[in-house]
Each structure stands twice: as structure tokens, then as C-alpha cells.
Image 1: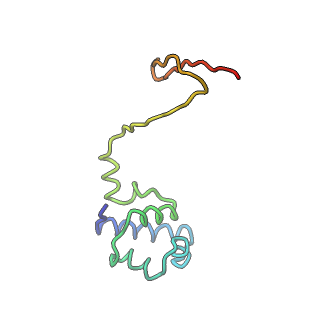
Image 2: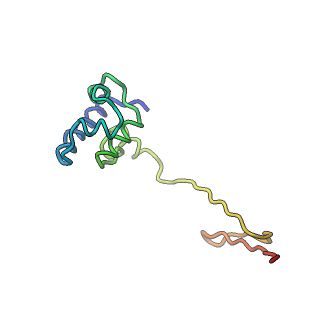
Image 3: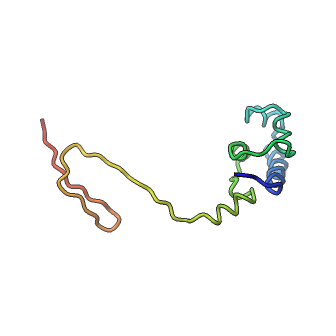
Length: 115
């Protein structure tokens, strides 16, 4: 994902706000992120492109949800469907005789043979 200048400005605003609230220094933040101060500065100033990994880790350290503060992610979050498709898998200790659906439940009937 490509982040915009608007995203970078929002990230910088979050940094300014949260570091004051959390009484966090830039030195402490770079240690938490495993970066040098130069790398951190280049990311916030726009010299180095932002990555989703950095944005996620940065926001996690500041206790904010990037999908609520980064404009591109807010727009993407609104545009994504609210439906998620999941798969569940199970195994049984026996021989399945019958499987059927009742409402939102799957019923599996099986025979277990004791040794």
C-alpha cells in the first residue's frame, strides 16, 4: 500500500499528541521500534517511504488504531465489506455416519469404536 503525504501528516500529528500524553521521548520510541533516530526521523519527514509494517508497529506502540487515524486506512476500512468468510474444520475419533445443517449449526453423527 502506498501512503500519501496526508497519511504522513496524520501520523506525525498522532506522534506529537501521543508522545506528550504518554510522556514518551523519541529515543524511547526508536528503541521500541528497533530503529535509529535517523531512520525514524526520515520516516516521519517523508524522506523514506512509509510501510504498513512501520505504521502498524508505530500505532501499536502509541495505543491507537491506524484504521481510525490514517486517512488512507480510514477510507479503505469504510470501503471494505463488513462480511468475512470463514472456514472451520473438525475431526472426530470415529467413522462419520451422517453430517447435516440445522440453522447455523453443523451436526456430525459418528461411530466411535472402543478398543
